[in-house]
Image 1: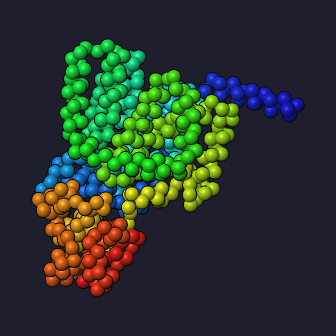
Image 2: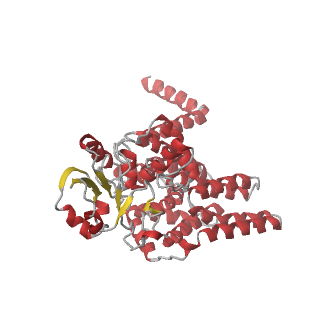
Amino acid sequence: MILKMIMLKYNVMLEWVKKNRKKLFLLIFLALLFYGSLIRLYGLEENSFWIDESMSALAAKKIHENGYPLLESGFVYSRAPVFHYLMSGFLFFGYNEFNARLISVLFGVATCILIYFIAAEYNKDAAWLAFTFSLFLEIFIVYSRQARMYQMEMFLFFLTVFLVYKSLYRKTHLLGAGVSFLLAYNTHPVALLLLPFFFYSFLKNRMNKWIYIAAGLVSLYLAYSLLERLSDFRLFYLADYILYLRYYAPFVLVSLAGFIITLKKRLTLFLGLSAVLIFAAVSFEKLFALRYVYLVFFPMVVLASVALSRIRFRWVVAGLYILWLSNIFTPITYSFVLAPEMIVSHNDITSPRAGFRQIYQEIEGIYEDETLIVSITSESGWYFKNPDYWIYFSFNRIPVPAEKSFTVYNGRDIYTGADIIYDADDLNDIKEKKIIVIDDWAAGRIDPGINSVLDNCKIISEKEGIKAYRC
């Protein structure tokens, strides 16, 4: 009797699930999206800005103050203008890390939704797997919590790829793809890699010859604008990037399997070509940085999910993999974030962090109007005040004359207009009392004689990766 009642209730519940299948899946989708968003928002303000974040935040602050990104040096910061104008809108609610990073959180969540729809072109299981991976994979969370344009670029880049792919079946999608491309290029020049996809769509849709001519001229102009960068080919970085991916070996291998399994599908070719082109493009960068290959993780997650969707017990395998490599079971070397963390970082040495906020808060309380000398001017300009002097160094350790450095404008620091100290003699020429703030990352790049001068100064504050001296 009891067994019959249990079976009856089970059948009623099963029938309800069948009737409300779409609503149930939508509820699960929204619940996962909400939790993934919560992980991205939790402790968003905890970390100080890393160096590049403070540059973006300072540019957005100037937009908020002046209406356009006019820096103290007189330089107009023109990089990724749409991104920085959007960021400045959030700074209306206050100048802090949370508001500056919020724009990336929104694009991070939007990227997860986009991944779902792209993977759904293969099958529903692949869509749900890709959606889940992107919500909780650590590297996706890290870049969704940074006040930089890389998360926005990932979204716009692959939105363009997807719309161009859809245009093969309905050419009206080319309009949306064009708008998305312009926004992507406005965000980062890596969007130039999308041009071959457009030409392929033009050929398939047998567009008017004037379309080819116009597209060709635009392509030549955009390529010419990057000619200096293209002339600096550094293939040896490619091996370093590939070596870095060993930390994500399961994803790499399974995504390769997904590529092979679905090779006949045009979308697979689009995603695979995107990854290859991105890897080729990073060989032209003067600076080695892991953020430059972040875009590769989008096709990797999609194709890995497609491969997993073809096996039995796929959700058991995926679930165990996520749990085993999550911060719940492997809190030191995790790949997935299932429990909210105040600080989420994948230990990227090419995105140097230090306790900038903490040290400048302490300096503010003991500052006696001394001459302020710093290694990272944008951090000082955001957290405290514009410095009087900047200690010059090359970001990539390759000697660059000051007049050719992207950090110098009209003989001064580009971000704050500070005068420049090149060596120990310049530092010794400053006779006034001074506070010198140097982070560990810059300390290994500045003139060695300056470090010798600091040996005779008193450390007045020391935080993670940074020291302040009074001389």
